[in-house]
Length: 86
Image (tube, rainbow, N blue to C red; front, side, top):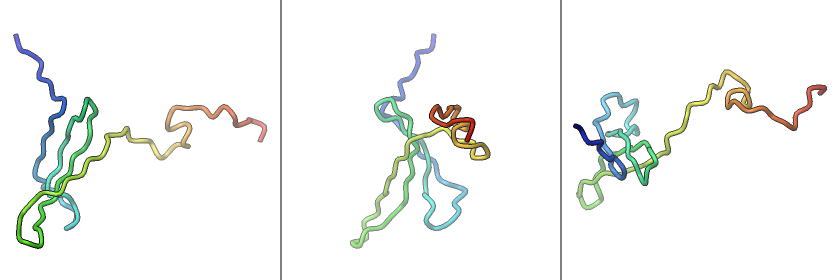
């Protein structure tokens, strides 16, 4: 019998092997914060005193919207205040 592992308030980073530019993160991953899944990015930096550190950024995961459709249709919503006769 295998117990489920609780990933709440845990994350992981992997070396970014597909950096597009010098500004691209050095590491990419995911983190779960209070039950919310987020993307995690990290850059290797050196302070003015020569101390190495990681600068971090988090970004909420969001569903990708199909941009080939009108906004209301892409989100699966109807716009109730729009009249057909216009």
